[in-house]
Length: 293
Image (cartoon, rainbow, N blue to C red; front, side, top):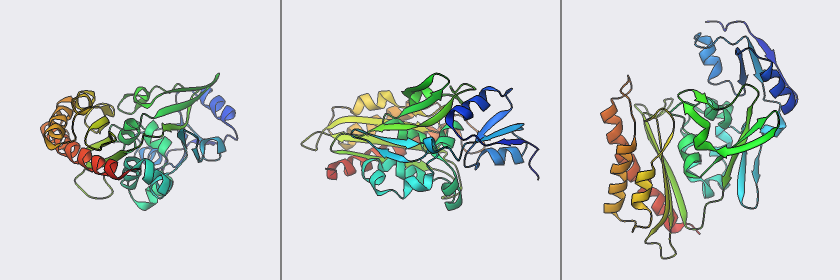
C-alpha cells in the first residue's frame, strides 16, 4: 500500500519550523523518526498534506548533563537512551522502558519526543518520565515555556501543543541519594508489542534504608492519559518499605486506574495487572535504592 501524496518541508531552524507549522491549515504534521506517523499514513489513518521534517534541527538533539538536571532533546532515540550507562545509573526506569519499545530498528529510529507527542496512553516512556518529575520544554512563537509533563497530555492521541509550538525536549531533575526506580509492563507478546499495562515506580529511602522517604508511581495504558497514582504514593510515603505497606499501595494504584475493555484486555484484567506490577516495581525500586549511593 503506497503512502498518500504529501509535501515535505525541511526547516533549518526552530523559528523556521514553528513558522511552517503556524502556516498550516490543520493538515500539517511533524515527522522525526517516522516510526508511527508513516505507518498511520500508509493505512490511511492520517492524510496530512504536508510533513515538516525536523531531523536536522540540532537544538532538538543531545543529552545535556547539567549541575542539577538532565536535558533530553526531543530527537534522542530510544536506542540512545537504552545504551547510555549514566541514564541507567540515575534513571533506570526510563532506560528499561526505552529498551522495551518495538524492535531494534524502531528503537534506533523512533524518538523520545515522538513517543510523547503521539500521546498514546500506552507510551512506554511516559510513566518513567512522570515518576522523575519531568518537565516538558516547548518552543513557542514568543520563546520557550516549561511545564510538568503530566499536564502535557490532554487525552488519547492529544497534547496541549498548539499549531505553532514544538516540543524541544524534557528536563529531569536528578533524583536524591538512595533512590531507585523500575519500569515493568505486561503485554501479550514479549517483543514488538505495546503495553497492556505499564507501571513505573521511584523509591527514595531514608538514611537508615528502612523507611520510604519519598515515592512516585505512574501507570500507562490504563487511563486516557498516563496517570500518576497519588493515593498509592501517599499510602507508602513515610512508611517502612515492608510487604504489607507495599501491597496496600499496590491495591490503591489498581483502584486509581481507569482501564477500558478492548481487544487486548478487559478492564478488570488490567486492574489486576496494575496491582501485581505496582507491587513488583516498588520492590525492585526499593532494592535498587538500597544499593544506590
